[in-house]
Length: 439
Image 1: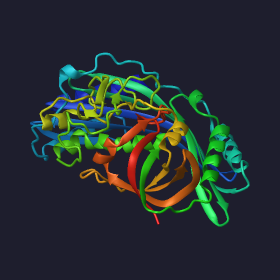
Image 2: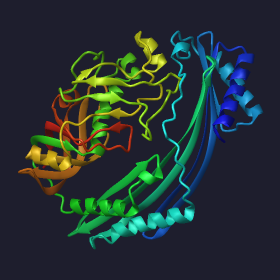
Image 3: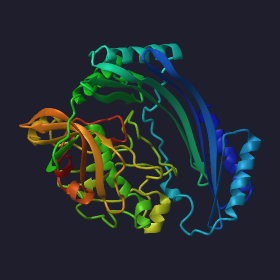
Image 4: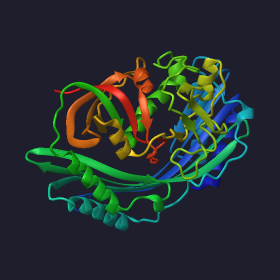
């Protein structure tokens, strides 16, 4: 189903809602198709084709909210879903903050953000690509003797959203990826590592050979991992982990965490929550980016803004409901933030290792030891120990710990080697000191 077909379903559901006497209503329709192949040790381990569609309807009546969804998009099924949503709204409690975002905030210019790049790869070609990628990794070094497989994935999805303000919009987007996970062993020590590439456009994916070789090199570099003594030292996060470290702050400034009073960054707008070098920019309209959107989940037009400037928090991440609860206006973030960019002030990972002198490079984080209410942070780590600005040996069975409010203030450098594979674009990130618990 294409954009026009999905928009027709939106109009039909909204008309039905109006006829049933709702005060307001919103409808979201989606259709996704995809292919996913995993090959392990030269054989196909998983081959999956998806073709999913669905429609969700939310209605508001007398400050009460009701929702229903269905994967059946026949007209009679859509009408039934609207009726169910309307019936449910009679049972819910009144909520003065419920309702659509303000009409004047609706997007009037739905930009083409270059998100739709279909990949014509079929199952046979995807299988061959996965096998070649894994084979490249396993042949790289005789110590690599096992694999969790290589995976090729492609997805194309179409979205349409509309509400009773008169807004109806739609767009199509694609996402593709190629990944590989291998295991190595030496003298009884077994280690694993991975690498992947992800992009909107298949032409932007790294080759299977590069992915296989990179996964192999990373797994080999972990062999011989040892424990280290408990100490305090600088910690350097690789880019793919730095974005998660920054991401904890975004969860803490989300509207839900703020109005529930459950955040280590409670009422923090205007406060210095990072070191001076940290800026977090929201850039929703980057072409081909993984979190680009012309409008948010409520039809509100997205816009560029700086969430953090020179370490100071400028604003929260809000949809209309949480904004009303806080007495503020939505920041066009219903559904989450779009393309957060953390500009770098230093070089790449190698230059930051040299700058660090002595410390720990974090290559993998284990466990979920992050308390979003207090900011207490404790994660298991696999990585590399650095002395004299050079990697000395791999380490494991260590834990890094601290409080995020304090750790954010100790960020000493951010690399320009940005990882663009996700919704937060951040380079390598150096924290000047953390507690490292080891033997």
